[in-house]
Image (tube, rainbow, N blue to C red; front, side, top):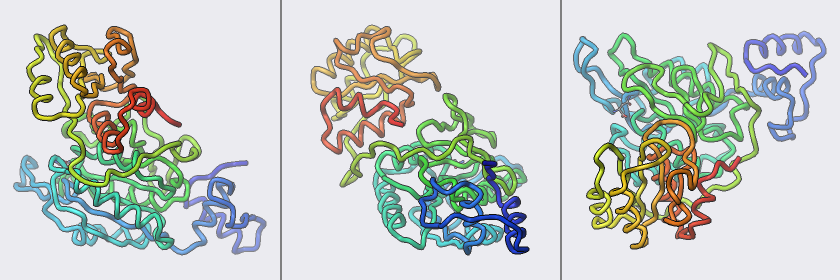
Length: 376
Ligand SMILES: NC(=O)C[C@H](N)C(=O)O
């Protein structure tokens, strides 16, 4: 069966149907993943526009240039309502509902705002009128929010995070185009039953694998281990694989903020155990090592991690490298040290996952290690 993935083809098919030429649409009672894409996408074209809820948090997508030299800008200057009004083309893609959650640069993202976002999404998941959710967010910590929501929200509707590398006022401003792409993806039935996603610069990424990997380029977002899971190509939305069954487990949403303290310690040449000892003194319940190579560190720092473990602190070895896996018992004896490895998760995502587990009182090391494995 020829699969089609875009509206233009659909309009043509829709035209054929109107002309009475043969084109069948399966009953819409089947779940989206059971309807052949033609009928599924056709069903979407015939249906009135999807209603997309946009939750705004701030970031450069709501930012404003501070001079005409394209050098300085302030993030989070525009209200959610004004941001949406500034992109009139959005109404061609979907009916839009807006809810302002915060007005911050995402370098100031907090556990409280994460919980607020999660509660709004849970309500939207139960609201039959809402087809998908878009979250406008700063790019600095977007990958963390996307990962957190993916771990705690069992969802079927598309949840898309989007931002901008350049603010309004810059000739190279990318926020409007990214926002239109995000709403296009969120209103496409093919985006259902997938991971929480990030849409930036015409690419679609899964929450677990996406990383911001450049300080200023428009294509700053990459997924170095697996690449993008789809693309927005003008009117067309393409996914490279069919939707998979839901993530096998999600964890209970932490009941309160702040979440249990977990610190990230960055490894380097001549590393001693000082910062690790400080983290323990400050009450860290977990320490993530942003290790060199496959999650390694100096002998002195390793000793400090072993001492921290003896005091009941959960130790997770991750890596500063930016791609690849950290595996158990390669250069460090994790079994003997009772350490956890982060597998493909970078330090900032490993930290959030450990916080979620500790907030859920999951302290058993085997259970923690299993929770770090890719569960699809
Ligand atoms: N491009 C951006 O959005 C950067 C900004 N500092 C933020 O994360 O909110």
